[in-house]
Image (cartoon, rainbow, N blue to C red):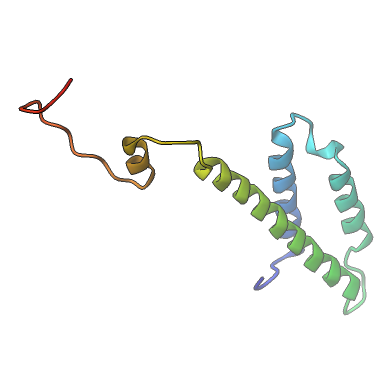
Length: 113
């Protein structure tokens, strides 16, 4: 993980990932325990008048790590659904999967309809 970015951006991205997770269930993301925990943690670690707030930086790092986990899970599920084995495929389907087209069979000698 390179740079953390701003805590506000991390917060917004976390909310976006929670929305993606709860889109399948139909429940609002604000009703989840994860959302309530994140709100409570971010409010408890607001920037104070201190020059260096170690707890706030630690929370930001943990939030960015959690965001990375949520994104990775979502992308893994999407890739798994797209490329998961569905049994035996035809030659045309296999060629289309890798972006190739099979040549068209001309209607001449040896051609069977």
